[in-house]
Image 1 (cartoon, rainbow, N blue to C red):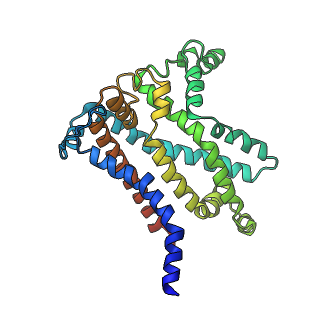
Image 2 (cartoon, one colour):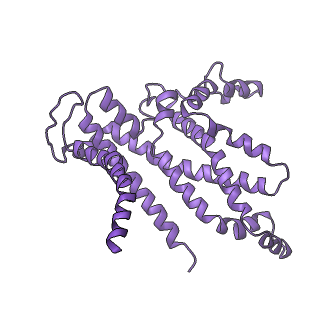
Image 3 (tube, one colour):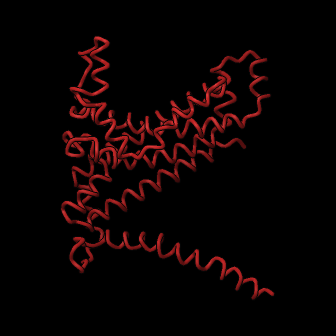
Length: 292
């Protein structure tokens, strides 16, 4: 009987495990191996160079600029997106007829990142773009800028697009979490004289904490990427003067422009461990703050 059970489990799980090993685990293993070689992507032979690629990353100025920009995005994008998402979700949960607004907020999720990048490239156009045209129409011509051509503005402009394109999904996520809170808790808070801010801080926020934690992890991973928007929207791409360089873009350029696949794979492995470390720390931080 016991042998029959094991044969059944092996037959049921074996194909799925085999596919997982072939299509998920083996590419990771191959990437880890290539990061230790000087493979050019063309030559059949890949010579083992040990950790030289990772040592070179520490002295690569462009890669360090990319790490800095990704770190800034990691600090800004999750915080801004969650703050806006929570605010809108809380507002929608207390207003009637909010479904239409929820659909409007979710609309960017139905567009591909390439389309979003192209659209916002037009919006940011310094001469005919919607943003500068609106500012000039309001008599704020002095505020109009070349948003993607000035080093101090290019990265914030890209981050604004990431927040805009992401916030709709998290409005829906947080709205669902808020709708799951028993109405009696809100009524009790109102009877105690709590205002909207006190109710949000004392009732809503603690009870949607798990959703916020999940959102923080996903948005952190998005912030560590940013490749598509930077590739399509910015000059260079990655410019001006490396102001919008991100690790994904450095990886792509190193591999497909310079033909240094081994070195580019080392960047990918470093990015993988950065994302993994961030996710583990974020989840652990959330677990440590759970009430006993």
